[in-house]
Structures are given as C-alpha cells and as structure tokens.
Length: 169
Image (cartoon, rainbow, N blue to C red):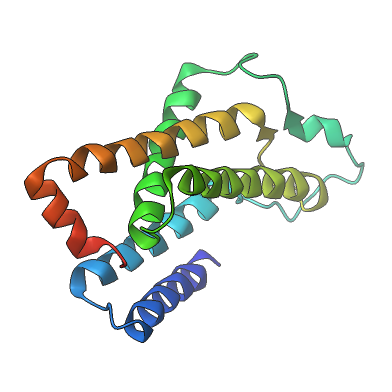
C-alpha cells in the first residue's frame, strides 16, 4: 500500500518540477526523499491495521491520550523529534516561498492528520496505535529543528549555494 503512495509522490513531484521548468537531478532527489519519507511515516504510524478486530467495541477514549507529558517516555519524545526533522527540511525545500510559520503550520497539519488517522483506524479498523497529544507536540518540535537546520545552513556561504540547487524555486 505504501509503495504506490511513494510512487505517486515521486511522479507528482517530478511532474510539478518539469511543468515549471525546474527539473534537475538535485530537485528530483528531493522528490524521491519526500516519497521515501512519506511511505516510511505512513508505514510506521498508520499500520498495522489488524483484520481480526475484537468483536466487542472498546470505548473511543481507549485510543487517545490528551494529557501533555503524562507518562510520555523520553525515547518516544526524541524519536518523534528526529522523525519530523525531515518535514521542516522537505517542506522548506519544496515550497521555499512559504514563511517559516507557514511551513511549521504544515507540519502541524501533517502531524495532526497522522494522529486523527491513528485514532480513527484504531477504533474502526483495529489499528495498532493511539493518538497522543505528545506525539503532536514533539513532531512539531522536530519540524522546527529541521527549519532551524536550514536557516543555519543558509547562513554558511557554501551551504546557501548548495541549498539553492535543491530548492524548488
């Protein structure tokens, strides 16, 4: 299921670049990185969906955690930060005209979409995840770290020239 999704992301990215006359190997590499990233995130956050869902329906509240930092492991926080660093990087490269606030808002939307999907699939399809406000918080922190990394690289002369080869503008 995630392979066709990845293929769709690559095709859409390359088509977009070609249509705008921006297609180069480094920019196509960004499209490929997005495809691999999206497939990996979907595979690890939405799946597994179990086909042997229990006959009795658990309460909807069994699949959500809305208390910030309560019982949240440091390893989970660090993992979510690391996993979302590419969102800050890739959004900024693919849509360089967006402000940092707008790129961060996109990260919030992506993370919230993941959490809502986990919540719905857990209840309706026997998914194996719980929607957690802490995941949302630390995902956004990770995206902010990614944005900050680009800002730092952009202030280094060699880094700024290198970034321009990968930006979709």
